[in-house]
Image (cartoon, helix red, strand yellow):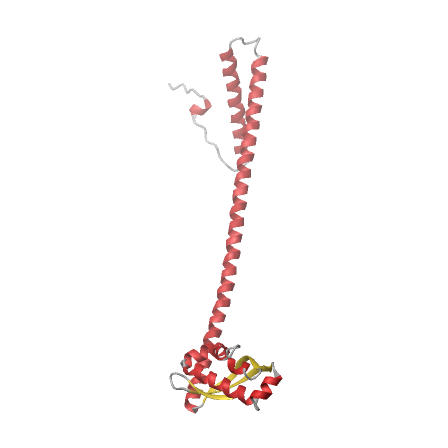
Length: 231
């Protein structure tokens, strides 16, 4: 079908569309009308003209499908009295009757389409950027958890090694003091001797560590326990 309608802001439009209707009562249709198709066409045309007249051109462009659908109620008594029912009215195409207005309308439609395309492109870029940031956040979170796990492992290893060293030192001290129990009855003397040997052992380890590298060691006379006889 094709209709000529006018919006509330006085823009004349030519509409093309399709009416989906059905005969539900043949006897009633025959008794009531000799041209059911014409009745449906004129009545839907009148309803659509009234519906478009209540909206502006901008409103019509944004929701012409909804306007057309609401223009034809399913339970209209006009159709029931003629034994037919209209399922829907769809607008498939529209244009301005005035050529100059039509050109402006095409520019508006084109600009609207371009704006939608730009918005969709920006939305896609935002989604890609968002997913990239989410991925980076996940990587940084996993890196943080890895560092934390390594720190916990190093702390646990140091604790275990410290406990082992403490147990070794305690066992060594108990053995040393027990062996000298009969030779040196005085406990403080035995403890002082054990401390001396431990200091010597630690000093030897330090010397070995320094000797294995490129470090240089400088000893003062006091470190070597030297006594100079100056005359």
